[in-house]
Length: 634
Ligand code: 28F
Image: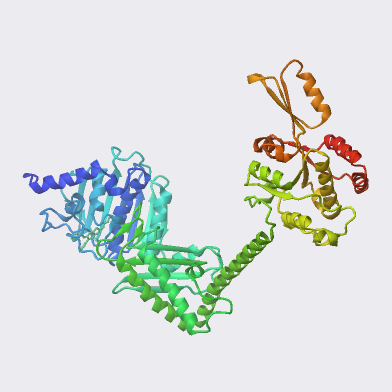
């Protein structure tokens, strides 16, 4: 029998040698996924036999030696000499890469995407593979190793029934990982049992001698109920559709009250987690049917213009299982997305059958349309709420004063508003700021003496208006803390008498009309230095910023004998942007004082003093007290 070695033998050998050389080309990789792909390939041959109506039972055994045995009670692989190869059919299927299509009279055969060459690929990548066939009242067996025939197809006994059994052990020369995952295999077997109603599948683990059974008389409807889990279905009766002639198709679907939907799709019982043409056609068909039904019935409630794909998707749980002939087209990195155009037929088919079902089942239809309309209402309401928020924000931006240089951060607590005096200080502050979180509002001249003016009079004042609008809260009676636009409000005025006067007026204004902002610690005073003193020269030069005359004297004395350069800042406008930034604006280097109130009585007296006639006294007050403040925020 083994005598002559033909050209064909060499070609076959070369074919399986190619699989061993580049296994990734055939099974994706040689890791865990590739290892399990071997199981799916053999399993799918049994599943194909079941799909064609010849097999009712599949048994899977995980051996203690790292092998897997799969048995089906189908017709058994033919044992006759194959007309094309001249070899028996078992050897043809397991030893020939081109066994798919040509030799294959199967209606549906994709074997996990390998188009019928799965058995040969598994054989090539297994250190041991045994096929046993029961057929014609006899039992036959043939052995292989790494794609090579190790025995003839021998008759080894009698058989009462029919079927095929394959045992294989993955080749350690190919696979780094050889431990099968029971969990993965269990999930795959359960899914197959769901997809083929009534098919009995068992999983035996020789290690612990456990046996699990998977059989679902309700098929994909049982699958659907499992997928719905604890979420409540909107109606007790899911929609089920099955067509066996023409395009073979089976669909089960239901809506749940949960907002997450889940659609599982399959082609020839192989999962397509990436969806594809069949899933898209399914979704479109369902949406069109629902829209058609609603149009013919009462139409949509007021305020809802249309039903979108998103509305239909919400809470939708479905199993879509389609069977296609011929070569399947897959797309995407992992080839998990079906791209076969034939699947588009699903759309019109589903549109008409689902719409008809809705008309025939008015109570179910009412529950389903109510669910989809609810999703549309939620969508419309949330859009309206979103629009309203956006509109209000736009309005507020529009009413902001033109001279406010706003910041971009939407996070209120990290933002700062600098109130500066005059356009020149305003200009250098805008240069020195970090526009992401720092805003600048220049105010002009001296605002009213707020101690005397009424709230009415102040509201009419332009400077006060832009100040209050910038802060965002409104003032006095219409104060609303939640609308505060900045985390810190920092008053930054010149270190001279006029500057202190303006700071005082502003503080008095905050105290009288926006006391919450002081109480909650939002108001600060910047501390612009009065002098910059450079002591020494060259690399050893030191720069000191000082805030009082006394400090200046100290620094000058300490610099005894060295070069001393003193610059007096008449105003913020005189400082260059870098100096302004480091002394009053940059959070890493500046000094600012948080303004606080211990108790109202004491603060009132303070403000009284501040507003007194004697400017000198007032100035001195701020000087002494400012340096006393403990709550120094650097
Ligand atoms: C554990 C793995 O592989 N089961 C299979 C069949 C049955 C037939 C078949 C298989 C015939 C001409 C190729 C029987 N009788 N389980 C399996 N069961 N293959 S694989 O036929 C293969 C083709 O060329 C079968 C009549 N027709 C088909």
